[in-house]
Image 1: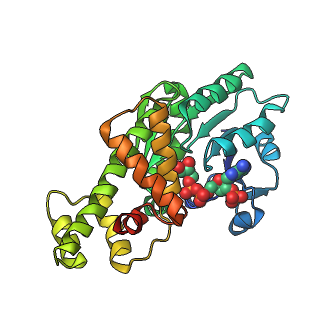
Image 2: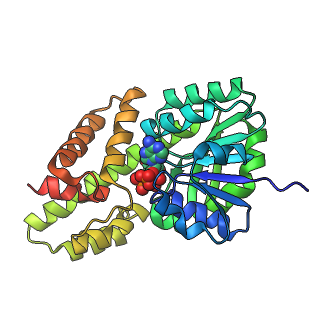
Length: 282
Ligand code: NA7
């Protein structure tokens, strides 16, 4: 049996642990990251490339996990210059705009290659544990081909529809998450103002019907008042703007956009998303 060569582009907070899971599963892996130092921990078992184009040439299935539209445009502009990419499957796991997803997919298909969007729910801990929720958009046959790899990255792979649907599902779940985080931050502040200790309030929330994976994962950050990015605030702002671009025009979205934008303006963009509490406190 021909073993497929797997390529991974983007070794950031999410991409790094995800690629490591594929390496640990024993797949023949090639990696590329714009900043080469992040590839160093892969030199023993995997092939490390210093150019995305060279990686693509040598791989059958190529995953991308990078920041945003600009990053995907940079990468694919170069990839489109390649003469022959026919038959290859490209799976973008980043959260980017649906428009761009459809444009890239079309160009890929014009070159007789295949494309899927497969963004994820879950931040760095589920990425490391291989327990992400993967929302896939694209062809069922293509999905079957990449499923053995996706199954090493997530605990659930949900095929939600044609290309672009993965992004739609992801923007929807992140919309809910942004509501939970603003609700959590405001509730903790409200309780604090009324003389309730933050640790007591968080315990009450987490034990109650309001408690969830989302509230539990942010509890230690709120207690320590230290916000290293499991999911950077700027990414949530990006996703809320993408949701707006998709026509989400709810009363909540207006409020959420204002909060996350002003928290960004206050210099919190690179911190974890729950650091909005520092902006809301002011
Ligand atoms: P990070 O930790 O900020 O990592 C971003 C990655 O994207 C990192 O590998 C970057 O390379 C890469 N990147 C950014 N811009 C470019 C360009 N222009 N060209 C090539 N590569 C680029 O993000 P996360 O891993 O937390 O998140 C990734 C996605 O998942 C994002 O869409 C979230 O919304 C969800 P670098 O190391 O900076 O050279």
